[in-house]
Image (spheres, rainbow, N blue to C red):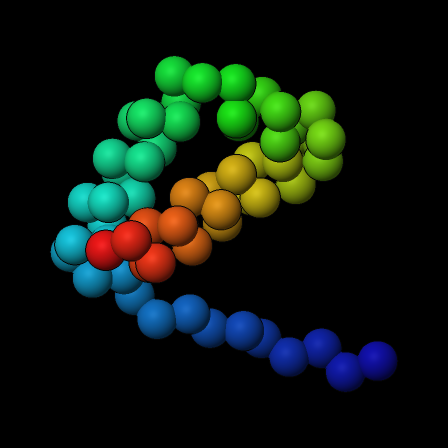
Length: 60
């Protein structure tokens, strides 16, 4: 099995601001807790932040 490293581009200032805005918005809901319950502590947090980052890139 071949493992390659994946690199992502840096977020723009607008995307970073949008991500922080979404993080503040979703931290007030049960979204993060639901991800952790579904995927476990480590993977849940990773999935939560990946989802927020993807949404920020799409909306910014």
